[in-house]
Structures are given as C-alpha cells and as structure tokens.
Image (cartoon, rainbow, N blue to C red; front, side):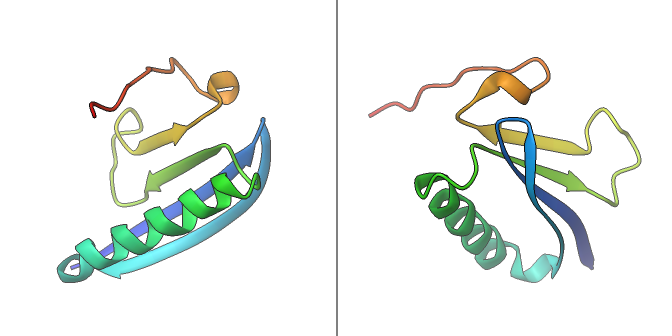
Amino acid sequence: MTIHLMTRGYLGRALQFERTENFEEADMDSFVTTLGERHAQATLDGEIDMVEIEFLDEPDVMTRFLRIGTNPEGMVIPLGFFPRF
C-alpha cells in the first residue's frame, strides 16, 4: 500500500518548503529514518523550526496532521515533551 504525505517546513510562521512524499508501507522504517534525518539537519542548520506532516489519506482532519518543532509560536495547542536520559 502506498502512503501519501505532504511535508511542510516552517521558520517562525513562514513556510520554507512544501513537499509531496509517497512511500510504500513496507519501506516505512527506512523512509521515516530518512525523513527524520533530513528534517533534523534542516533544524540544526537553522532553516526550519517546525515540521508539519499531513497524512493525505486520513479523512479525519483532527488526526491527519503531526506537527513537531522547537518553536511553539506557530503551533496549535503545543505540548511540551522532555526526553529521558
């Protein structure tokens, strides 16, 4: 099964990129790793501070978005999380 995503990168509230991403469910582990590395590097480089992933195949608008970032300014109802070391 093919999974269809739209990824958007923001710096502040300004859209920096918007990309359609398609991958096979069987390739999910490698795709998610690659996508995470790409977005982490863009964050480290100061190009973005938030990533939005829209699951285009999800009909429920309340669950079709995943947003993660370091600047809650442009986020709707941001939640903090802290890694355990």
